[in-house]
Length: 281
Image (cartoon, rainbow, N blue to C red; front, side):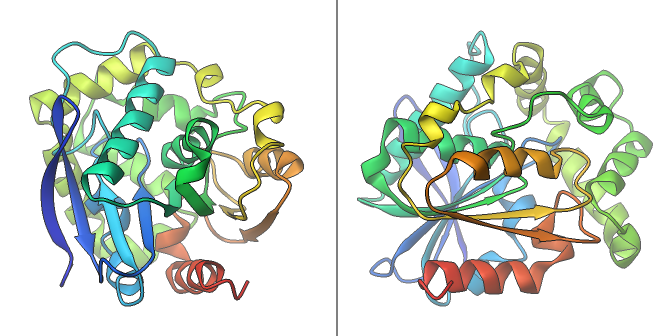
């Protein structure tokens, strides 16, 4: 990621690893990744951050419990406490970087964290992009169940299947698939990463992820919802649920697209999001 720098900063009692790029005087966009095995800011956003950094100040952290951010010695005991820890992490990161207000891009779990940030610190955020976000997911799909239980048999073959399911059509990534599997498995197999992953999914439930209609109705931010029509990890119905209650939202659903719109529909994702943050959409 040219011109995107890897950094660490104190966020409370531990250090958060993050990528940063663009002019600090520009509007800030914080990118929050999802929760798959080996997930990190790099694996989720490496192909799109350079584009956004041309006009914006971009910040993409490894969420608490993932990647190269310091891992807990004592784990949160349930999904609600994991969520609170990540909300506190992002606010502390903004304070450390002296970012008073930011836009958000949240993918999957990152989208749920974005909605929780708006519940607890709405004055700190402006426009919000949610991509394949799980705020309205009530029942786990078979694919999501496999993801949650991946640590019980984390073989390269199982992981390659899992990554294929993230996409509607993996053929255009076929040559890179083994490389992606290798990179993410290397990350996942770090003892601290694997322990955090197991602790997170063992004690978390989908009910911890649901955002109540009463909260959504009070979110007056402008939202852009992006969802792959063929998403099998967080079905389109999750965004439809969120859309039903948000006062100011638009939804763009892509056919022939799974859970990673930033990969399968990269150019359209960048154009839509950039136009939205520029208030042209």
